[in-house]
Image (cartoon, rainbow over the protein chains, first blue to last red):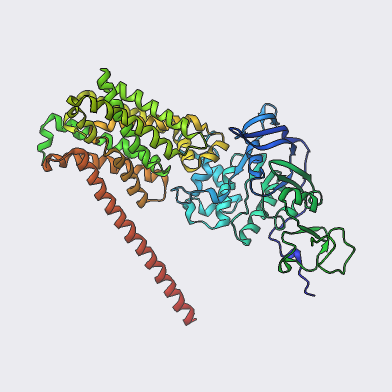
Length: 303
Length: 288
């Protein structure tokens, strides 16, 4: 039997688990229901995000993942409950940075890397339409941190996928956020870019920034994160570590489909189409199955 | 060559056309990048309706048209906030209805049909000192609005959703933009006419876009092109004995063709440069 090492199959490179620092909450949702006009897009959400956390939000399209992010940003009408932004310092609210899906960006817009990053400082720039020395120095600092300083005068159209993602991270980081929200940062990008982005986010998280990202990628992204939130039909179905969320019961409720969850060491692997022999990874342990050796087919696999 | 400068009305006309060229180009940059080219056309027609209503009601044109224009943009903004109505549909419904009011009033009072030819096709030689002052005030007010809301306007033009997430007051910025657009159309009506305003809003920014990848440079180039084509369009119309609005727009179209040709030639030159570099690199690899 061919043994395939799942750990080399992943694009995510993480160092040691992030230092959680003080467990102070940054943002809390208390029974929050939000929506547009008469349509509810997130129901009765209760959760708290603490400093230093790295959270992945998973679930099918339309389950409320992006709505959850937009709720933190106060961008959706609130029908019930309370969104609590805690203080980063006495009298100063927690700062949130937002990175949209790159697929929604108008790449033909005539704008340079530095101009995009500077948008994150529009408030601090006051009445000035132009950036002063301090603004430019901060932008340079952020771009250096993201290793794209040499691209600052480049049009965003002329960048690679990883560089593009870094530019929008730069716009969020120039505001010195406590919490970074990313909407599908690995969607529509190649494996190398996904690896770059996740590596960078890991570094930012270890430096103290809390991160919440939405993803459809259960194996290369979600299963590596310390905390996951599963969404299904506009509700939070599960919230906890990968083992609490990436299990058949939660995935069935979230996606409405049977999935097989396999384990190899501490890693979980979700087989999204267990009936398809070709997608079955080899050399992994079905969750709850006896110790290896084993065959891929298991009692947990649907008939 | 200097003949037009000997006449006061021509000096006024060239000055007004230059201001209108700068105004339409500056607001046009945002119109084009927001993909709202249709709104200029619609708004001009709507304000024509306002002009007719003002005439019938005996109100000053600028007062009546401003009220009508502001009302129109707020109705468009309000309607397009509903998810079921897209922005272009809202523009189509509201501006055409506002225009239809004017057409209906004219059809019932055919005696003043000729009075509105100037509004429809532009009549630059009829520019009065008051018109010139109104145009200059509009330029100053819109310039101030653009200066004050520059960052917010650029951010919302680039990505309105994300700008909102970064705390940009979207409704205020959209309100300022809509009012500036309405003011531009009203101030340009006499020079360009309802039928040609949309072209003046779109052509200089699109030509500028072909020449640069930087927003601020695009804005500057568009304003320079708008101002120069406005001035020279009015100047040439003296010699050609043609409609000023049409001459300005045709001059802008000619500039667009030149910009398009230049951009095409530049692109070909760059491609050839890359091919040449690759060819030399290939030969070096072979030699080594």
